[in-house]
Length: 319
Ligand SMILES: [Mn+2]
Image (cartoon, rainbow, N blue to C red; front, side, top):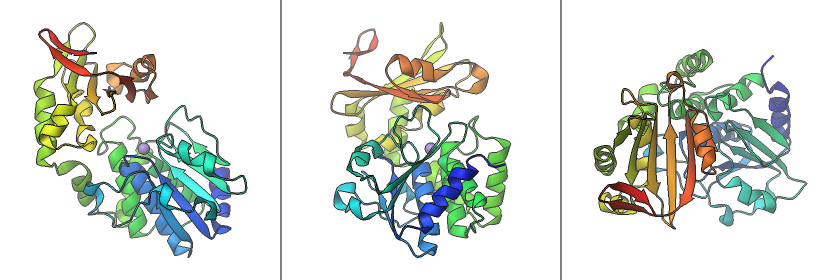
């Protein structure tokens, strides 16, 4: 039997019984939170529901070719009017701020594939063995025998392509490839999705990457490849935090390294550490992230610390 079959049925029952439904996408939205929210919205629209998507940030520019959806800041919504609220992907990036404003007679649901989720909702569909929330939402559609339209297939593929790094990360299971095949049959434009998410690079991105790659150093003792990105770099190239996202993944491809660490300044004195590894390298980066109060997956995790990145004669250091 399909995992979460019971929860998927309960969620669909709640959907059918609610007229006003709110979907919640996490802050600094990525392809998975966007794709899963938009796929669900397509379905809810087809049922004639009143649906809004709440997010603390707007839809990123690079996804504008795939959707013209509007994300609404939660402060601009009457949260009390929604009978059902569904949060998708990495829900501890904003949803925890919404929950205290929800009354007990509203139904809440989480669909997430991040480990160590601590918030509690009425319907919990959380399992870190999935590649993406879009994979889980695909299973939701299958469990409820919901028709997967071309639009739904496009949005689901977006999330899977984004979270598997175009089917390259170790979370690309045979089941993921079966789903991709099904979504292609339904009309999902795979090349267009890959172009939108990975293949088109702004000049600001390339310049920032160039700077980060130039600074990369390998520690021969532990196999760590590391680099830093300062606030000044971001300003110089007009780069956004989205431009940083793939640096750690690319550094991790250098032969002979065991894992990558990219430290980037995010303003307000916060430095974000992004860690990546690969299964065959035998390093669990989530334990490293945990040492700095962070978390995530075995092969992709992160943490935040307070400080500033400063260049010294012997290299970079955190003050
Ligand atoms: Mn995800």
